[in-house]
Image (cartoon, rainbow, N blue to C red; front, side, top):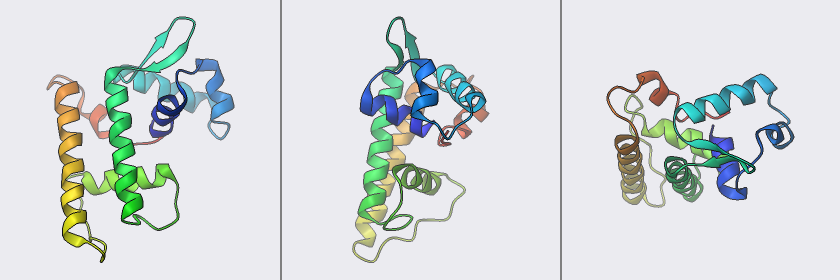
Amino acid sequence: MIRLITEIDDNGPVPPRGLARIFPDLTRRRIRHTIEQVRTLGLVSIRSGVGLGLTDAGLQLADIYDSTARWARTHNHPSSTCTFITRVRATLQLLTPVQRPVAAPPAGPVEAVEDLARLREALDRWIDSHWSDDEPADALQDLPEAA
């Protein structure tokens, strides 16, 4: 999901059949499942003649992914050399309530924790504004997962 949302955010709408070319490492079944999931969550819509495009919710989530990756890159989380997806996944895991508090990097521990708290607040606001209590709980639990 992270890869799909980021791809559309970075490069604009994509034709659904073009996703196999964009993500050659994923099976067609996995791509279809991811498209169904992001459509169900209201993150993308299919635009006639254009393809899959991000909804307002999808654009806002892409901004959260970007902010999350920037925090991770700044604080070398989970390591100094890793991919955008790895950075986003690892940082989103820090934002889940069941995780232990983040071990802040030595260069700026207070700032790192404060910035991470701001990311959590942004994610909470996004969830609150795009989901109601009648949404399936498992959909929100799957949110940080990448395709």
